[in-house]
Length: 120
Image 1 (cartoon, one colour):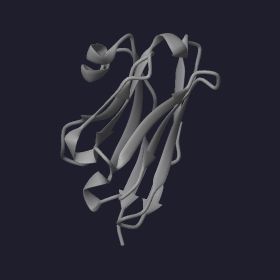
Image 2 (cartoon, one colour):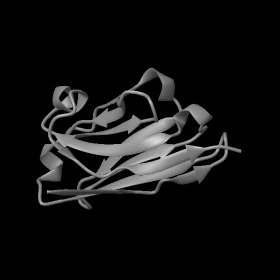
Image 3 (tube, helix red, strand yellow):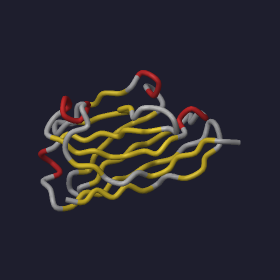
């Protein structure tokens, strides 16, 4: 199983970025998926998750700014981020697991992260 995250980079406050996570070697459409992030010196936190039916959940700090989506035909998970803030700076990691609970606990498969830096 491989999860390849991409799309990170440098953005100005208020700017936008879209992250992608391409999965292979797994039945992507059977799984829930999530984006976690880890900032230096902080614990990893779940930012957003989506299950196989398309239901979503978000951390309060990103509601209304971030949108998680999936394209099962392309085995790809997305995170559209807008209204970026300096506190969104972190390494963003994608995670695939059987259901929301397992995504919340960080079980299942992980990809390497992609760095998002929000700075003027």
